[in-house]
Length: 186
Image 1: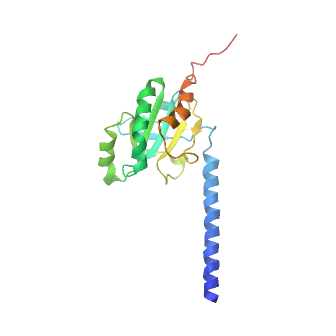
Image 2: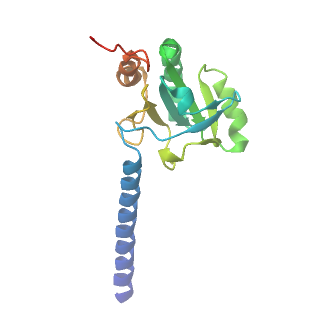
């Protein structure tokens, strides 16, 4: 009986520690990534060989989507992402799909991405540490033309469809591009 009580206390203490650490991690993540604040810095080596960083994204609405070839929900939202991208790219939309695939799965990811018109990259060739440890996918972040984070994928809806994209991104595309804003009356 005594050993059962000790075991129960140990399990309870472990669970409480897990909750405390988990809460601290979530608080730390929330403290570093905040909607309405400057987006975390990123430096992504695209499969095309080009680099994509905030400098290349300046004045554009940037969507960073983390996915993997083995992830059914990820692949399920790709057609909607592609339709939206094709429709709005000329308005200043950039969409980067960052694959979380292991090296042995890259050929499969490459084959999947042949169907889509937006850029993609591999996580191991991308610097996105400011977005936290990517442990859940699909995961999407939206950054407006001024570099402000407008959608933090860690919170809210996880899946994307055309209705969510229209609601979230289209108003950002309607905002003036940097340097093109009307200065107002003189």
